[in-house]
Amino acid sequence: MKIIKWGIIGCGNVTEVKSGPAFQKAANSALVAVMRRDAALAEDYAKRHNVPKWYSNAIDLINDPEVDAVYIATPPSSHKEYTILCAKAGKPVYVEKPMALTFEECNEMISVCKEHNVPLFVAYYRRALPRFLKIKELIEGKLGTIRHVNCVLYHPFEERYDDEINLPWTVLPHISGGGIFVDLACHTLDFLDFVLGPIKSVRGHATSQLMAYPAEDAVSMSFLFENGIHGSGIWNFASFERYDNTEIVGDKGKISFSTFGNDPIHIQYANGEKESIAIENPLHIQQPFIETVIAELLGNEDTSPSKGVSGSRTTWVIDQVLKEFREASK
Figure: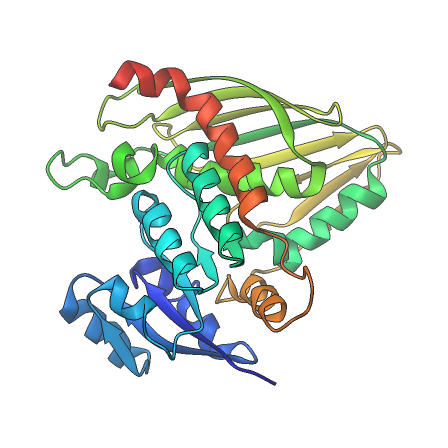
């Protein structure tokens, strides 16, 4: 069976444990090249992870004849550019989440990949994790007809965001598309799309309560799925502690779970019975999803659950919520 030989553009923190080693450990897969603009850091990554080649220019990696497919692990501001370059070179693309800065950019990526007949996958890897597949199974089999969803995520303010000169890119909208809400909430919103279907209507508010950085730090929203399920959510990154819970309520029971971490899944049924299920995430958390991508690239039709079209829907939801905040910040 053919081996898919991967190249990584942007071998930063996310590739150290979450994703990078998965390309080496998955069956029928090999990581043959990495790229980072800082040549010394690219070389260091390659040596530490036993990767044969390293580059400081993305074009060189994309044009490497030994690279079959490319994983784009850069900040969102360069996702569109690199995806288009890969598509024109005929290389399948696996791009980090969120898919791009805006829904419009997502559509450009989808269009170019379609034009060049190149597969486009988006790293919403919870769609393949055993923990979240179990949640999906419970939602579909134990809760009856789903009525509504409520998402709550809040964190304390972190000191690293208190340096105006050296702010992390995750709170610089021209690089990330927004703030920590964009970086984290996209996972929850995409998973809801996966288990409940597309969201068709969104209303929301985004503000900066601390005014510590250019992006929003507080978001509230209500949304409506195409199938009539109602949803609401609160995200705040200036609170006193960490809390992460999504509750999905049906007419026969409800399920509660965290998007991040390994907290037990809690189910409560209409008859008062309760159930708790613990399923830990794997060390290389993207590996189950990467394996679905590899299977599809090897000819197993439609095995990967997260592609350009579904990934773009989550960016559309985020655009609706942040629209007014972005306009006011110009």
